Image (cartoon, rainbow, N blue to C red; front, top):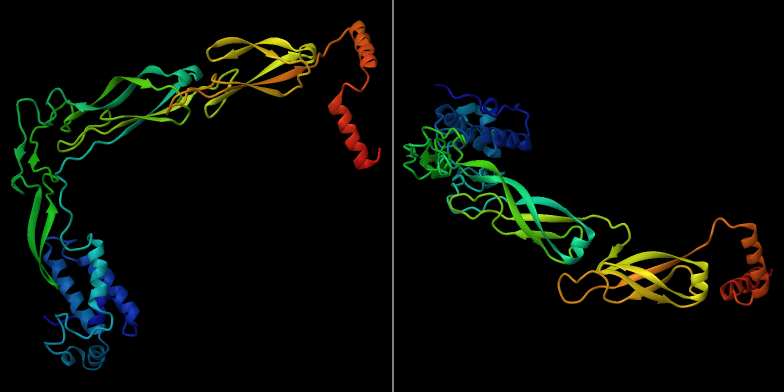
Length: 376
Protein backbone atom coordinates (compact mmCIF):
# COMPACT_ATOMS: atom_id res chain seq x y z
CA UNK A 1 0.00 0.00 0.00
CA UNK A 2 1.33 3.42 -0.97
CA UNK A 3 2.20 5.70 1.91
CA UNK A 4 0.00 8.70 2.52
CA UNK A 5 1.40 12.18 2.18
CA UNK A 6 2.94 13.21 5.53
CA UNK A 7 1.27 16.62 5.45
CA UNK A 8 -2.06 14.90 4.89
CA UNK A 9 -1.35 12.52 7.78
CA UNK A 10 -0.87 15.44 10.19
CA UNK A 11 -3.67 17.47 8.60
CA UNK A 12 -1.53 20.55 7.84
CA UNK A 13 -0.71 22.41 4.67
CA UNK A 14 2.71 22.37 2.99
CA UNK A 15 3.29 25.94 4.14
CA UNK A 16 2.82 24.97 7.85
CA UNK A 17 5.56 26.22 10.18
CA UNK A 18 7.27 24.29 12.95
CA UNK A 19 4.75 25.27 15.65
CA UNK A 20 1.76 24.29 13.50
CA UNK A 21 3.33 20.90 12.74
CA UNK A 22 4.12 20.31 16.40
CA UNK A 23 0.62 21.32 17.52
CA UNK A 24 -1.03 19.04 14.96
CA UNK A 25 1.16 16.12 16.02
CA UNK A 26 0.36 16.57 19.72
CA UNK A 27 -3.37 16.60 19.07
CA UNK A 28 -3.33 13.45 16.91
CA UNK A 29 -0.85 11.59 19.14
CA UNK A 30 -3.08 12.07 22.15
CA UNK A 31 -6.16 11.04 20.17
CA UNK A 32 -4.72 7.78 18.80
CA UNK A 33 -2.33 6.85 21.62
CA UNK A 34 -2.57 3.10 22.45
CA UNK A 35 -3.33 3.79 26.11
CA UNK A 36 -6.44 5.64 25.04
CA UNK A 37 -7.42 2.96 22.56
CA UNK A 38 -6.48 -0.40 24.11
CA UNK A 39 -6.82 -3.25 21.65
CA UNK A 40 -7.71 -0.96 18.73
CA UNK A 41 -5.44 -2.03 15.85
CA UNK A 42 -6.61 0.82 13.62
CA UNK A 43 -5.65 3.42 16.24
CA UNK A 44 -2.30 1.71 16.72
CA UNK A 45 -1.52 1.91 12.99
CA UNK A 46 -2.58 5.55 12.87
CA UNK A 47 -0.34 6.30 15.84
CA UNK A 48 2.65 4.76 14.04
CA UNK A 49 1.82 6.69 10.88
CA UNK A 50 1.56 9.96 12.82
CA UNK A 51 4.94 9.39 14.48
CA UNK A 52 6.55 8.59 11.15
CA UNK A 53 5.18 11.75 9.56
CA UNK A 54 6.23 13.93 12.46
CA UNK A 55 9.77 12.54 12.58
CA UNK A 56 10.31 13.65 9.00
CA UNK A 57 8.48 17.00 9.06
CA UNK A 58 9.99 18.06 12.40
CA UNK A 59 13.55 17.59 11.07
CA UNK A 60 14.50 20.55 8.79
CA UNK A 61 16.90 18.45 6.70
CA UNK A 62 14.51 15.52 6.20
CA UNK A 63 11.63 17.89 5.56
CA UNK A 64 13.58 19.63 2.81
CA UNK A 65 14.37 16.29 1.10
CA UNK A 66 10.73 15.19 1.45
CA UNK A 67 9.41 18.44 0.02
CA UNK A 68 11.71 17.97 -3.01
CA UNK A 69 11.63 14.22 -3.67
CA UNK A 70 8.66 12.90 -1.65
CA UNK A 71 8.94 9.52 0.07
CA UNK A 72 11.78 8.56 -2.31
CA UNK A 73 13.94 11.27 -0.78
CA UNK A 74 13.60 9.80 2.71
CA UNK A 75 14.34 6.12 2.11
CA UNK A 76 13.77 3.28 4.52
CA UNK A 77 16.09 4.66 7.22
CA UNK A 78 14.59 8.09 7.38
CA UNK A 79 11.41 7.36 9.26
CA UNK A 80 9.87 4.98 11.75
CA UNK A 81 12.36 5.59 14.56
CA UNK A 82 13.26 8.31 17.01
CA UNK A 83 16.86 8.83 16.00
CA UNK A 84 16.32 11.82 13.76
CA UNK A 85 17.78 15.23 14.51
CA UNK A 86 14.43 16.76 15.39
CA UNK A 87 14.62 20.40 16.30
CA UNK A 88 11.71 20.01 18.72
CA UNK A 89 12.78 16.96 20.66
CA UNK A 90 10.46 14.01 21.13
CA UNK A 91 11.05 14.27 24.86
CA UNK A 92 8.97 17.47 24.84
CA UNK A 93 6.16 15.83 22.87
CA UNK A 94 5.95 12.73 25.00
CA UNK A 95 6.20 14.65 28.24
CA UNK A 96 2.76 16.01 27.36
CA UNK A 97 1.44 12.52 26.65
CA UNK A 98 3.02 11.16 29.84
CA UNK A 99 1.35 13.94 31.84
CA UNK A 100 -1.95 13.07 30.24
CA UNK A 101 -1.68 9.52 31.52
CA UNK A 102 -0.58 10.46 35.03
CA UNK A 103 3.19 10.59 34.49
CA UNK A 104 3.72 7.40 32.50
CA UNK A 105 2.16 4.72 30.36
CA UNK A 106 1.20 2.60 33.35
CA UNK A 107 -2.16 3.87 34.55
CA UNK A 108 -3.25 4.13 38.16
CA UNK A 109 -3.72 0.96 40.18
CA UNK A 110 -6.74 0.30 42.29
CA UNK A 111 -6.63 1.34 45.90
CA UNK A 112 -7.10 -1.85 47.86
CA UNK A 113 -5.74 -0.56 51.16
CA UNK A 114 -8.07 0.54 53.97
CA UNK A 115 -9.73 3.89 53.25
CA UNK A 116 -11.32 6.08 55.88
CA UNK A 117 -15.00 6.90 55.37
CA UNK A 118 -16.34 10.36 54.60
CA UNK A 119 -16.82 12.87 57.40
CA UNK A 120 -20.24 14.29 58.27
CA UNK A 121 -21.15 17.77 59.51
CA UNK A 122 -24.24 18.95 61.38
CA UNK A 123 -25.24 22.26 62.95
CA UNK A 124 -26.52 22.39 66.53
CA UNK A 125 -28.32 25.40 67.99
CA UNK A 126 -28.21 25.87 71.76
CA UNK A 127 -29.31 28.47 74.31
CA UNK A 128 -27.00 31.19 75.66
CA UNK A 129 -26.93 29.65 79.15
CA UNK A 130 -26.25 26.19 77.72
CA UNK A 131 -23.25 27.57 75.88
CA UNK A 132 -22.01 29.16 79.09
CA UNK A 133 -22.28 26.16 81.37
CA UNK A 134 -22.33 23.20 78.99
CA UNK A 135 -25.12 20.79 78.16
CA UNK A 136 -25.75 17.27 76.90
CA UNK A 137 -27.79 17.13 73.71
CA UNK A 138 -29.26 14.38 71.57
CA UNK A 139 -28.79 14.87 67.86
CA UNK A 140 -30.10 12.83 64.93
CA UNK A 141 -28.05 12.17 61.82
CA UNK A 142 -28.58 10.13 58.65
CA UNK A 143 -25.67 7.92 57.61
CA UNK A 144 -24.97 4.64 55.85
CA UNK A 145 -25.08 1.49 57.93
CA UNK A 146 -24.27 -2.11 56.98
CA UNK A 147 -27.20 -3.81 55.28
CA UNK A 148 -28.77 -6.31 57.68
CA UNK A 149 -30.06 -8.46 54.81
CA UNK A 150 -26.70 -9.20 53.16
CA UNK A 151 -24.41 -8.33 56.11
CA UNK A 152 -22.62 -5.79 53.97
CA UNK A 153 -21.64 -8.13 51.13
CA UNK A 154 -24.05 -6.65 48.59
CA UNK A 155 -24.99 -10.15 47.40
CA UNK A 156 -28.52 -11.49 47.63
CA UNK A 157 -29.21 -13.51 50.76
CA UNK A 158 -28.13 -17.12 50.18
CA UNK A 159 -25.57 -16.13 47.52
CA UNK A 160 -21.98 -14.96 47.65
CA UNK A 161 -19.64 -12.75 45.68
CA UNK A 162 -17.68 -14.56 42.97
CA UNK A 163 -14.06 -14.06 42.01
CA UNK A 164 -13.72 -11.95 38.88
CA UNK A 165 -12.60 -14.21 36.01
CA UNK A 166 -11.12 -11.38 33.99
CA UNK A 167 -8.54 -10.33 36.60
CA UNK A 168 -8.56 -13.52 38.73
CA UNK A 169 -9.45 -11.52 41.80
CA UNK A 170 -6.57 -9.03 41.60
CA UNK A 171 -8.71 -6.10 40.50
CA UNK A 172 -6.10 -5.27 37.87
CA UNK A 173 -5.55 -6.16 34.24
CA UNK A 174 -1.99 -6.18 32.89
CA UNK A 175 -0.94 -6.23 29.28
CA UNK A 176 2.20 -5.45 27.29
CA UNK A 177 2.06 -2.55 24.87
CA UNK A 178 4.59 -1.68 22.20
CA UNK A 179 5.17 2.06 22.00
CA UNK A 180 7.65 4.25 20.16
CA UNK A 181 9.73 4.26 23.35
CA UNK A 182 9.78 0.49 23.64
CA UNK A 183 7.59 -2.06 25.35
CA UNK A 184 5.68 -1.06 28.45
CA UNK A 185 3.61 -3.13 30.83
CA UNK A 186 0.29 -1.36 31.36
CA UNK A 187 -1.70 -1.86 34.54
CA UNK A 188 -5.34 -0.88 34.48
CA UNK A 189 -8.21 -1.23 36.90
CA UNK A 190 -10.31 -4.19 35.80
CA UNK A 191 -13.37 -2.89 33.98
CA UNK A 192 -15.36 -6.01 34.80
CA UNK A 193 -15.20 -5.74 38.60
CA UNK A 194 -14.08 -2.09 38.80
CA UNK A 195 -11.08 -3.02 40.91
CA UNK A 196 -12.99 -5.00 43.52
CA UNK A 197 -11.68 -8.41 42.47
CA UNK A 198 -15.14 -9.89 42.93
CA UNK A 199 -18.42 -9.76 41.04
CA UNK A 200 -21.95 -9.89 42.41
CA UNK A 201 -24.14 -12.04 40.20
CA UNK A 202 -27.32 -11.54 42.24
CA UNK A 203 -27.55 -8.19 44.02
CA UNK A 204 -29.21 -7.74 47.39
CA UNK A 205 -32.62 -6.15 46.75
CA UNK A 206 -32.53 -4.17 49.99
CA UNK A 207 -29.28 -2.29 49.34
CA UNK A 208 -29.07 -2.73 45.54
CA UNK A 209 -25.71 -4.44 45.91
CA UNK A 210 -23.95 -1.62 47.75
CA UNK A 211 -23.84 -3.42 51.10
CA UNK A 212 -25.13 -0.30 52.89
CA UNK A 213 -28.47 1.37 53.58
CA UNK A 214 -29.24 4.86 54.86
CA UNK A 215 -30.44 4.96 58.45
CA UNK A 216 -31.22 7.60 61.08
CA UNK A 217 -29.12 7.44 64.22
CA UNK A 218 -29.44 9.25 67.55
CA UNK A 219 -26.21 10.34 69.24
CA UNK A 220 -25.67 11.91 72.67
CA UNK A 221 -23.30 14.86 72.53
CA UNK A 222 -21.65 16.59 75.48
CA UNK A 223 -21.24 20.31 74.80
CA UNK A 224 -18.50 21.73 77.05
CA UNK A 225 -18.92 24.96 79.00
CA UNK A 226 -17.71 28.10 77.25
CA UNK A 227 -18.51 27.23 73.64
CA UNK A 228 -19.51 30.00 71.28
CA UNK A 229 -21.02 30.29 67.82
CA UNK A 230 -18.63 28.62 65.37
CA UNK A 231 -17.14 26.19 67.88
CA UNK A 232 -16.64 22.78 66.25
CA UNK A 233 -16.91 19.57 68.27
CA UNK A 234 -15.60 16.39 66.65
CA UNK A 235 -16.79 12.87 67.36
CA UNK A 236 -14.36 10.25 66.07
CA UNK A 237 -15.79 7.32 64.16
CA UNK A 238 -19.34 8.64 63.87
CA UNK A 239 -19.17 9.44 60.14
CA UNK A 240 -19.66 7.30 57.04
CA UNK A 241 -18.28 3.73 56.89
CA UNK A 242 -14.79 3.16 55.46
CA UNK A 243 -13.75 1.10 52.44
CA UNK A 244 -11.71 -2.11 52.39
CA UNK A 245 -11.77 -2.41 56.16
CA UNK A 246 -10.96 1.26 56.77
CA UNK A 247 -12.32 3.15 59.80
CA UNK A 248 -15.46 5.26 59.79
CA UNK A 249 -15.17 8.96 59.13
CA UNK A 250 -15.75 11.56 61.84
CA UNK A 251 -18.77 13.65 62.76
CA UNK A 252 -18.27 17.41 63.14
CA UNK A 253 -20.82 19.40 65.14
CA UNK A 254 -20.86 23.14 64.47
CA UNK A 255 -22.35 25.06 67.41
CA UNK A 256 -24.64 28.06 66.94
CA UNK A 257 -25.66 30.01 70.06
CA UNK A 258 -29.00 31.80 70.22
CA UNK A 259 -28.85 35.51 71.17
CA UNK A 260 -29.80 36.43 74.75
CA UNK A 261 -32.50 39.06 75.47
CA UNK A 262 -30.34 40.80 78.10
CA UNK A 263 -26.70 39.80 77.72
CA UNK A 264 -24.26 40.26 74.88
CA UNK A 265 -20.98 38.39 74.76
CA UNK A 266 -17.44 39.53 74.04
CA UNK A 267 -15.11 36.51 74.26
CA UNK A 268 -15.62 35.28 77.83
CA UNK A 269 -17.04 38.54 79.18
CA UNK A 270 -20.71 39.48 79.11
CA UNK A 271 -22.30 42.91 79.04
CA UNK A 272 -25.72 44.13 80.06
CA UNK A 273 -27.39 47.55 80.29
CA UNK A 274 -29.53 48.56 83.27
CA UNK A 275 -31.74 51.67 83.32
CA UNK A 276 -31.68 53.78 86.51
CA UNK A 277 -33.60 56.87 87.53
CA UNK A 278 -32.22 60.38 87.85
CA UNK A 279 -32.68 60.17 91.61
CA UNK A 280 -30.78 56.87 91.82
CA UNK A 281 -27.95 58.31 89.77
CA UNK A 282 -27.79 61.48 91.85
CA UNK A 283 -28.15 59.96 95.32
CA UNK A 284 -26.72 56.49 94.71
CA UNK A 285 -28.65 53.30 95.32
CA UNK A 286 -28.53 49.54 95.60
CA UNK A 287 -29.78 48.09 92.33
CA UNK A 288 -30.67 44.55 91.21
CA UNK A 289 -28.24 43.16 88.62
CA UNK A 290 -29.05 40.02 86.58
CA UNK A 291 -26.25 37.49 86.13
CA UNK A 292 -25.99 34.01 84.59
CA UNK A 293 -26.13 32.64 88.14
CA UNK A 294 -29.17 34.63 89.22
CA UNK A 295 -29.90 38.12 90.54
CA UNK A 296 -27.48 39.98 92.82
CA UNK A 297 -27.51 43.38 94.57
CA UNK A 298 -24.97 46.00 93.57
CA UNK A 299 -24.46 49.45 95.14
CA UNK A 300 -23.86 52.34 92.77
CA UNK A 301 -22.34 55.54 94.19
CA UNK A 302 -24.02 58.92 94.26
CA UNK A 303 -23.36 61.11 91.26
CA UNK A 304 -23.24 58.16 88.83
CA UNK A 305 -23.26 59.42 85.25
CA UNK A 306 -25.20 57.82 82.41
CA UNK A 307 -23.22 55.12 80.49
CA UNK A 308 -20.94 54.45 83.44
CA UNK A 309 -19.72 50.85 83.36
CA UNK A 310 -19.23 48.74 86.47
CA UNK A 311 -17.21 45.52 86.46
CA UNK A 312 -18.32 42.49 88.45
CA UNK A 313 -15.53 39.92 88.49
CA UNK A 314 -16.09 36.23 87.80
CA UNK A 315 -19.67 36.52 86.60
CA UNK A 316 -18.98 35.98 82.90
CA UNK A 317 -18.54 32.88 80.73
CA UNK A 318 -16.40 29.99 82.01
CA UNK A 319 -13.09 29.72 80.15
CA UNK A 320 -13.39 26.79 77.73
CA UNK A 321 -9.69 25.90 77.90
CA UNK A 322 -8.73 26.63 81.45
CA UNK A 323 -10.00 27.63 84.87
CA UNK A 324 -12.05 30.60 86.00
CA UNK A 325 -14.58 32.78 84.27
CA UNK A 326 -14.81 36.07 82.46
CA UNK A 327 -16.39 39.16 83.99
CA UNK A 328 -19.78 40.86 83.86
CA UNK A 329 -19.83 44.49 82.76
CA UNK A 330 -22.89 46.51 83.78
CA UNK A 331 -23.57 49.74 81.91
CA UNK A 332 -26.07 52.01 83.68
CA UNK A 333 -28.25 54.30 81.60
CA UNK A 334 -29.89 57.26 83.35
CA UNK A 335 -33.48 57.38 82.20
CA UNK A 336 -35.00 60.84 81.80
CA UNK A 337 -38.74 60.91 82.51
CA UNK A 338 -40.88 61.76 79.46
CA UNK A 339 -44.19 62.70 81.09
CA UNK A 340 -44.23 65.21 83.94
CA UNK A 341 -47.11 67.01 85.58
CA UNK A 342 -47.05 70.79 85.91
CA UNK A 343 -46.32 70.43 89.62
CA UNK A 344 -43.34 68.15 88.91
CA UNK A 345 -42.03 70.54 86.28
CA UNK A 346 -42.26 73.45 88.70
CA UNK A 347 -40.41 71.48 91.34
CA UNK A 348 -37.65 70.71 88.84
CA UNK A 349 -37.35 74.37 87.85
CA UNK A 350 -37.05 75.34 91.52
CA UNK A 351 -34.50 72.56 91.99
CA UNK A 352 -32.45 73.89 89.07
CA UNK A 353 -32.51 77.41 90.52
CA UNK A 354 -31.43 76.14 93.91
CA UNK A 355 -28.44 74.11 92.75
CA UNK A 356 -27.25 76.58 90.13
CA UNK A 357 -24.58 75.63 87.63
CA UNK A 358 -21.71 74.90 90.00
CA UNK A 359 -22.74 71.27 90.60
CA UNK A 360 -22.73 70.42 86.86
CA UNK A 361 -18.98 69.96 86.48
CA UNK A 362 -18.99 68.35 83.04
CA UNK A 363 -21.36 70.99 81.64
CA UNK A 364 -19.27 73.77 83.16
CA UNK A 365 -16.07 72.36 81.69
CA UNK A 366 -17.70 71.98 78.27
CA UNK A 367 -18.76 75.63 78.11
CA UNK A 368 -15.31 76.75 79.25
CA UNK A 369 -13.79 74.84 76.32
CA UNK A 370 -16.42 76.30 74.01
CA UNK A 371 -15.46 79.80 75.10
CA UNK A 372 -11.77 79.14 74.52
CA UNK A 373 -12.42 77.81 71.01
CA UNK A 374 -15.09 80.20 69.74
CA UNK A 375 -14.72 83.17 72.14
CA UNK A 376 -18.33 82.99 73.25
